[in-house]
Length: 200
Image 1 (cartoon, rainbow, N blue to C red):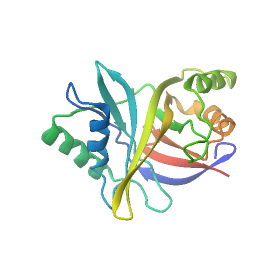
Image 2: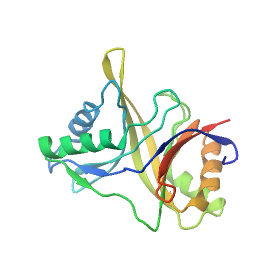
Image 3: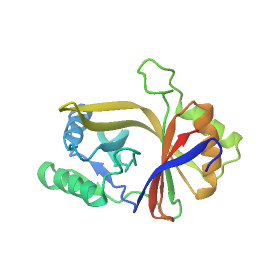
Image 4: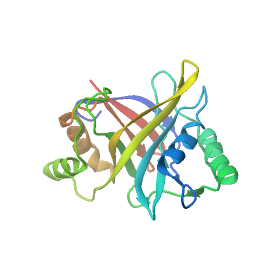
C-alpha cells in the first residue's frame, strides 16, 4: 500500500484517548497500573509522553494484530473508565480534527533490546527530506502489555507519534524503511479506522 509496506490488519472505528494519572503518580507506578488492565483477550498499547507538570501522560493506541485482532473500542473505553473511577485518572479527548492521521512508529530496529535505536530528530529530518509538510511529531516511549504464559509481559521501546494529514503516509513509510522498522500503526479519523502496515 505504501511503497515497501502492506496493510496486514485493520479495525474499524477510532478511539485514542489521552490518560493522565493523578498528580504525584510515579511513572513506573502508572505503567504498572496500566499494564495490569490487560487481559487474556485485550492487549494494551500506549504511547507514554514526556511528563507535563511531573505527571506522565498516556495515549491509548488500538494496535491491530494479524493473529489477535484489535482491542475493541468498548474494551478500551472500559479500561479508561476503570482508571478514571477507581484510580482518579483523567480521560481526555486526543487529536485535532484538522490533523486526522496519527502514526505510531518505533525507533528500535527489530525487537531485540540491544538493537540500534534511532532518534526522534532523525525522524523529523527524514520527513522534511521527503517533503512532508504539515507534520508534527512527539517523542514518546511505546509500551505494549499482554498476557503470555500466564503472566503480564511488557514490551517497551523509544518511539514517536507522527500527526498530520493522509498525504504524509508515503513519506512516513519511506522513513520507517530507512529506520529498519518491521511495522507501524496508522489511526485515520477521516477513514474511521486503525490499521497496521508491515514491511514486505
